[in-house]
Length: 411
Image 1 (tube, rainbow, N blue to C red):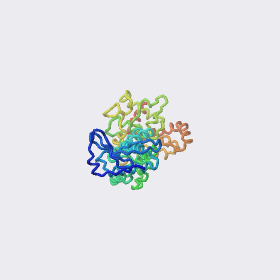
Image 2: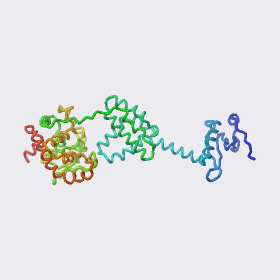
Image 3: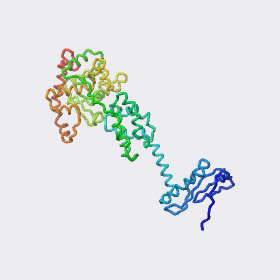
């Protein structure tokens, strides 16, 4: 017959005095108060391991932080686990491990890991824009939050002030990036579901706005303004270079001398510098080569064709052309990226093959077979088109003498 243990009282627990050797005061059903010679009191639960059938102990904490009532609750939970053949000590260790993982899986840590993957598929400038947007709008509020505490209402409340300012495009992009981060967390096993999958629906959709650009017949106005503008030679050359090559502002600003194949008259932009992470080759017209000749005395000894004003070892900022266009009076009418649209409109109006134009603009064809054909076939047809485009720019600059025009006249 099992020995009947009289349950402890709060008074007995409180008044238990230390002895020369540690001793236990039993409360029954495996729970004891262990009193040590130094006076400390610890709750101990003794049980039979569900697998090995060996006796084992697990600590429930120190008295008085853990009261008799709390210790009994812990005993009840432990016995419930044992009834399911679960070892309480293993269960406790796993719970501690999971808690540590939750605390280490903060939003900023997971976002950083996601970004390491993301930046391999986008251009450097675009990647920087992505991370800056998170640093500016999201990380200050929830960067230190465990991932499990990120909820849709929380994130929506953070983005409402941004939407209230009318920055709906920013809200849209942040929603997309936050969804990518949480999907990454799901795919890596950190959470079971993406709680932010529907946050975009909480905001008004931004009205699609095309990049400000000029009409095809307004090109002479641009060339006139450019010829009269009080801007640095590097900035002016950069604007003309982007106009002639139909490239994006970031691609043009970061042009490197070692990307230029003078022998074959080509500009080979590596994949890591392109928006779609695909290498892009641009046939260079006489006028485009003339621009390189004009700036070579300034930057030919450096890595970048268009050096930054304050830090010549670095390249010009991608916003340099935009800032200059604003000073020239084109604010709200034309941005640097809009020069690509100007080229596209003009070339389409002149009857050039739309697929060749798209290839020149480095727009990726979603059809893989046609895309492979385009890369192999269109380069020759693009040479003729780029020659026509540069001659058209030169004609628009007649009387204004663009830098490219000056050099082509003497070539």
